Image (cartoon, helix red, strand yellow):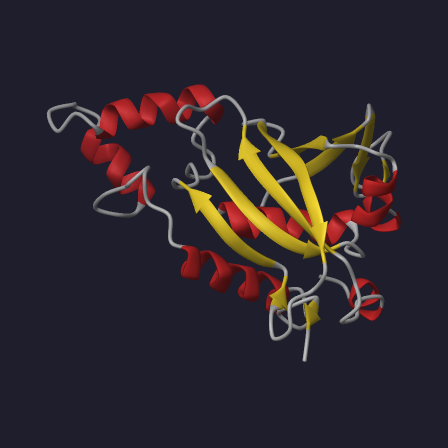
Length: 204
């Protein structure tokens, strides 16, 4: 998260509750996150990636009311995500928008604006407050590739199972797993990696 966005955050900043749901999978994979209204879309991308469990090694974009937002100079024909805040999106009356991560695998997320609320004393933001199910592995081939992966892993006798586990780098992959403490730890790491404090707002 950039220092520019941090400078506009204060204890009086409104907090927006967002539900982020990965499209095309059942049962759904989702996270509920609370973020300052002043957060810029570029920083919101970092929050969404960390909350969902993405590593952040791929391109992304937002589509809001038919207009695409992304990193200018990296993507063509997009509005600058670092010149638009979530508060600005809320003011347009938008109730939901799309966030796409990895244009190859095309992971589309529906971001629903649930409500706004005042900050809570002692609470740090952004924060993940709820969620369900594990994030798909990076570069697994999108929705269809992930479905195939789960099918292979569920069959101990499948000839490709050991190879897929080796590719995953773990003895087992639990698609139902969700650890909220780990998720918030990853949020803090992502912020530290970007060279800024781990939270956009911290109230007294």
